[in-house]
Length: 348
Figure: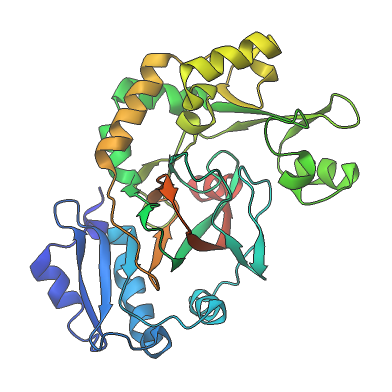
């Protein structure tokens, strides 16, 4: 990890934040130095009162520590949350070409996911299954579930460092091919994914984003896209594990479910969503098992409290969701769009 962007130890962290008089800063996980825990000096004060100091803090330390948990602040409503997000200088972006169902609550603020509450969502970097993604993501807890429902996070730099070098090299050299089939009734429809009823709009979006389109019939669509297996951060230049192979691979639903789907659909390319190496060859079970194991070991988990906000650099940090019981409301905003094309231009 580049020396200029290494996480700070306790002494250095105290020195770097000494002038931020409205904040108290520590680490949720002291060993990993991630994420930073940011609390108000005056518990319960409005997060709006601390925006200036929070801006200085993120400018100094977000690239070092990858993510921050803001806790103990008053966040009166979604308008305050939206204002907090916009204070970082980039308006929220819409959720396009998504992989899970979300509803827009106010412009730029969405439900985090509407995935069934009894199932977990593995660690992932937002939209790392495509070639355009948000650089920043904010998650805000409005209602904390009584049981479960945590949003584990992990440092993508540490994941990259711990992945077997032979697997890293294979992902970097071969890239990944994501295949999605819409309209089968087993996953999102193309209308939900692309937010339109127009086939022409879908085709234009896919053409602009390097996504191959095949209409199977009036209701069914298949897309294929060749995507990065890893990446490097445009500011820190540090390599990161940046893909969703372990999540998009049908085995993420369990071996029995994958076998059942293959029995019904006949071919892996007909699965609702699946991923291959860039040349179309299958990912090995042992590779996926290794990746999932590393991610599980790097996961940092903490219970949500109402009012919490988690801010992540989406290339430096991954997030997940644990199963839960009862009511839970966590909302999300995304901002600062970036793309693989821009990353490659920086490398040129």
